[in-house]
Length: 181
Image 1 (spheres, rainbow, N blue to C red):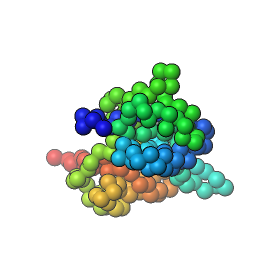
Image 2 (cartoon, rainbow, N blue to C red; image 1 turned 120 degrees about the vertical axis):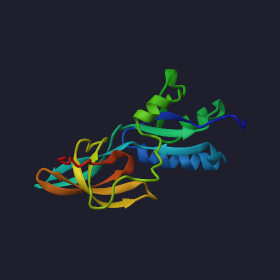
Image 3 (cartoon, one colour; image 1 turned 90 degrees about the vertical axis):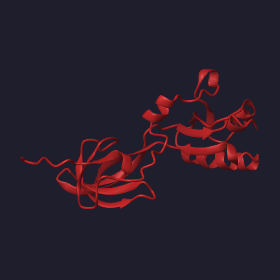
Image 4 (cartoon, rainbow, N blue to C red; image 1 turned 180 degrees about the vertical axis):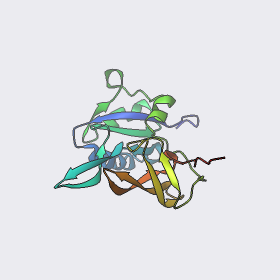
């Protein structure tokens, strides 16, 4: 393997409902072929959605892009058959089913790269504004902060009820209080 090869993000198309199976099968296939160092990350984009059932509202996770799995890997042409013959995979997303890596802009827009957050400018009990994602625009109170996982729990008022949501730290910013000077 050449030293100058870098990992890039690719998109795989799967059969409907096979996304998790594809994620697991890819890990097994790469391990079986002694290439697990070339598969760095496998992501199924999920979003939090408020669902009402029997008069009760709850937050559930739903696939943001069904039938697509995003993989970060060091790719070469010898891997095409190995990946496309993985159970559940219908092919790569690209011209004639050939792999076309995502651009840096696409990766950023899809939030595939986890942004490292080492410090936060808010504390437990403070008011924060959610700046991106399903709850963008909501204001809430910080319940907990976990720097290790890069997440925090925020209670927001939704449909007149206080609802706790878990968010990436990068999606939250301190709500600047307006002072009367």
